[in-house]
Image (tube, each protein chain N blue to C red):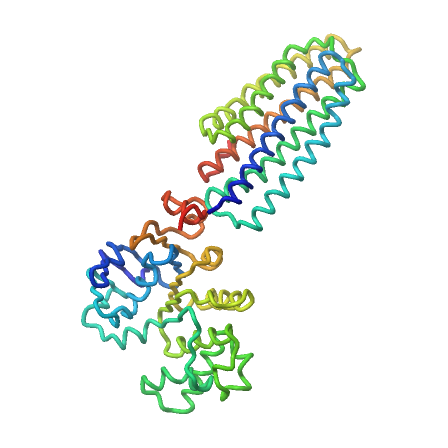
Length: 249
Length: 214
C-alpha cells in the first residue's frame, strides 16, 4: 500500500525550478531513501511531504501529493498534516529545556495536559527511540547536555511523541560518529513496522543498509526509483550508475 | 574523481589477465609434456601450480582491499565479486594441469592410441580458458555465451576418449593401468572445460547482473 502518491509535481523557488515533474509512490511501512548530489531536490521533495516549503517565500507548487489518498495541498489542515508527518533534521536541534519537556512539548501543544498521560507518552517515546536506558535518571536535566548522538535520538523521540504515521529524516546521521550512526540505523529499522520512513542521505552505504526503496535525484528530476538492492547492484539508468560509482556528483 | 579507484581496477584487470595466461600455458605445457613424455616440462607445470595459487592469493587481497577502501556498488561491485569467484576456478584449472603433469612423471603415455582425442580436448579447453578471459577483458557477452556453449564440444570429446578406453581395456588387458591414467587425464581436461564455463558465467554476471547457470 502506498502512503504517498506524488503526481506531476513541479516546485519553483521564484523562477528556479527545484523539482521537475516528479511522479512517485512511497510505500507504507517501508524505508525509502532519497539520494543524489547536493541541490538535486531531494530535501525539497522531503519538505514537500509535510508542507515545510510553504514557509519559504516565493515557493510555488504544482501537481498533487496524496497521503492515504487525501490531497495534502487541498483542504487538509497543515497542523494536522504535521501531526501525522514528523521530521528529524541533519543537526540535532533539541529545545533548550529538560529532556522531559522536549518530549512533552508536542503533545502539550496538541492539548494534552494530564501529567499521567504525558509521563506515559514521554516514557513510550524514549523507549521507542532507544534512548530510555541512557536518560531515565536525568529526565529533568537540560537536553543540551546530551551527546550529539543522544540529542538526535531525543529529537526522534520528540517526533514520535505526537504519534505520527510518517517520519521524514533529512540526513539524520551526517553529524554523528559511527557508533551513534549505527544506533540510529538500528532504531530506524525497528521503527519501520509502525511508521513510514523517508530518509535523505549522502551516505550510500547507509541507504543500502537500511532502505527498501531508493530514489535517485538529479537536477530536480527523479532519474530512477527502484528496490535498493537492485539500484545499488544493477541500476537501470546509466546516470544512476555514474553517480553511485562516483563518476560524477 | 575515481582516479585512484580506476588505477586499482586496471591493476586488478592486469593481474587477472596474467593469471589467465599462466593457466593457458600450464594446460598447453602439460599436454605437450604428455605427448613428448617430457619429464622436465612436466615438473615445470607442477611448479607453476604454486605460482598460479600465489596469483590467486594476490588477486584475492587486491579485491578485499578494494571492497574495504572503495565500497564498490553497481558495475564495480559486480566486477570485483566476479573476479573473486573467477580466480577460484582459475586456481583449480592450474591444479588440474598440474595433476596431468604429475601423471606424466610416472607413466609414458606418449604412444597412447587415444592421443588424438586428448590433443583435441586440450586444444578445445585451452580455447575455452583463453576465450573466457578474453570475454572478461573485452566485456564481450557474445563470446562468454559461446564459451559456455563450447563446453558441449569438450564433453563430447570426453565421451569419445572414454569409449575408446573401454574398447582398449576389453581388447588389451595388459595396458589397463595406462588406460585408466589416460581416462583421468581426459577427466581433468573435461573439468578444466567446466571451470572455463564457470568463468564465462561470471563474465556474463559482471556485465548483465544476472547469473546464468546452464
